[in-house]
Image (cartoon, rainbow, N blue to C red; front, side, top):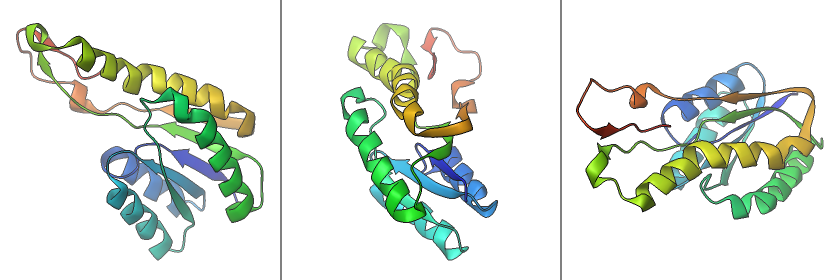
Length: 158
């Protein structure tokens, strides 16, 4: 059985992606950030349909946690699927926040960069040693970044 990791799968695009991937016979390690209940509900929905899923906490904006996350993933792969690699990484986690440029704080801007750019990059880097030969990385975005033209808005994704 192939295995996919889907970040940000507690709701929205990530949840749908995790469920659809599982329907194709792929095991899923899904992550949740601030919505553990959503992560558990996604895993339960997959299992209800006969799939296999494990929900893990992960804040994609906190790169210092990625080594421990990689070790947890390695353990889950061994314990759940009796293998030491995964096949697909779907970098989906994110958050949407818009504000007028003059109202955007440096802290908000830095969080956007950490979660939407830096996090997926360094998470991929940290997980590559566990990825099977021929594996694939998919980076998603949502149309939440596409808004009607407004003066002086900071886009939700960079």
